[in-house]
Image (cartoon, rainbow, N blue to C red):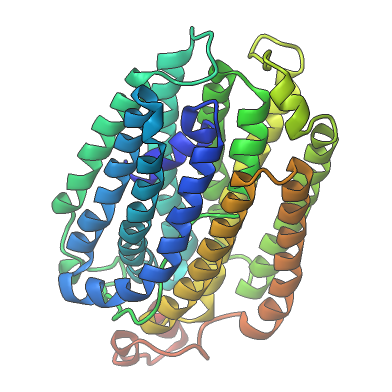
Length: 409
């Protein structure tokens, strides 16, 4: 209801506005403050606990939605959007710190993929709700930007989301399905979120080529694809008939195929337009136009790739250790790199670097990421977790035979 709605707003391209520059600059400041202030989010989470940390982290999303509503009525208020993005970055560091620690701490060893899939589905369900609101509000619109009704709907839903953490169970009282207690890690590291490739997908493809009705429908199917992609890969990564190492290789190969398919496909569309041709064209692709079918299917595959990538990364971190503090370091390092990269690419879009440059950079970085991950899989992913650091709960259990050892793991 908060980061999901924020993604739905960004997924419209330019935050639903014709001018994408303000949106890009706001996102750049958002990710910059995200990366910096997340260094201090761990101690806050330790002091307040994950529920209050989630609540505080949610408030920044309300401010951002409100800023878009303000600038939709008063275009001169564009600096408010950028300031709100910076404040949201501070809050997002808190939210994703608490989220990352809980997601990996809650699962048993055999449920890592399932729990990541559950989180990613809930997270993107918020985007589906937001995209549905936008599509319903703008289905008959003949303009290229959303109206006040869309922003007001988003604002109400985000306000509801702020109070959801109050209803959560206390993690200290939760018992896992294997009888062990959840141990929330003491977090020493930074937490941030989101991705380099969102910039090209949202602003340089969806906003550049489609009218608001098509953008809204694209946004909806994109986030539905995210849920399907996450759940599908999570199911594969939890198949007990394959060893963990084989599952890691299978996940890597699927990502390689998806990266190649999506970006070769996208390249043939990207060569057909530039920033200059987009600015000179007032007629955008609509859902009834013949080119729409192929373009929307590419967008669906972009959503599948995003969810599969994130699910696979979290799963790999989860199988490399079962120590909560170590997992906190892994997630913090990964998210920190993500946020710093996102700040850079949103700023690149804000100063209007050519679409092709941003697209090629996105493709190259994904390829480099896959190549870099392969030796890590070879060296760090084992066929079981016997060599991983043991948690105190597991170590203290009696394991007189092989069955007990497997249950413990």
